[in-house]
Image (tube, rainbow over all chains, first blue to last red; front, side, top):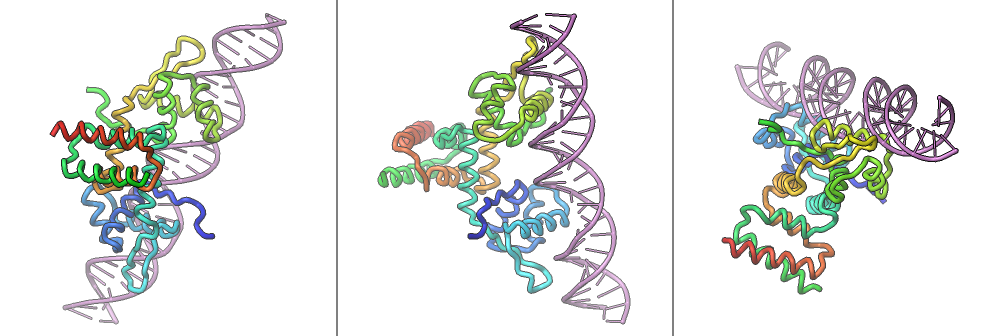
Length: 128
Length: 128
DNA sequence: ATTGCAATACGAATTAAATCGTAAACATGA
DNA sequence: TCATGTTTACGATTTAATTCGTATTGCAAT
């Protein structure tokens, strides 16, 4: 069996993964352009981070052409769930409901969005 | 004006804050006992962390007696919201609904919990 | 007072993450 | 070919977080 160890991306790595998940694949340049929309970063820093992610198995890459193409190697949804669950257990004493309350309450969730969640709940209830 | 800078507790610091929030206040010994229920840690390590948290302003402490009493200095709910929001923006492209879906879907949310969230949604809808 | 124990103080080492400079490789077009 | 610009490779440094050993302090029981 491979990859028994859980891969836990760092903050910076998650930002990069987010770009790769959104675009499917990307060059360092493309990722870097995305990142610098929201924060400062040197090009070689982004490059180095992505090379390290390659070492860790977080991404794969196609090196056929000089400009390498990076592809996410871990599943978006699985990673999201893993991180959310960790947060629920450490910050909300294991109560997903408490977390949802914080996420939805006190803010600008639209009627549309609320409707979606309602539907989800109906579906889940039906499965019980 | 004081404290303009946002205090961003580390993982370890959050674990300690969780104990303090749950108990209201606690000694290093008490916190340490709690932590070691779920993980390895040396006593002086916990002590040092809490001392650093004091420096950062994450906690205050009462040093009247030899055994110091630590009190959380940042608000639980505010901190939760801050962290959840950050996660939503970085990991769920800003969609709180997507996050809620991951949190609720694919797992063991009880009927009770679903009911609570339904009620929350009704309340929110009423406010629109 | 002395001993023993539990607690604090604090420097230092370790580990991990992020940043960056510089060199080398490669492609392109003048 | 040569100059230019882009990219990768990679070592080294910096910064942050964590861990731990040891010294010291204070208290209580004898």
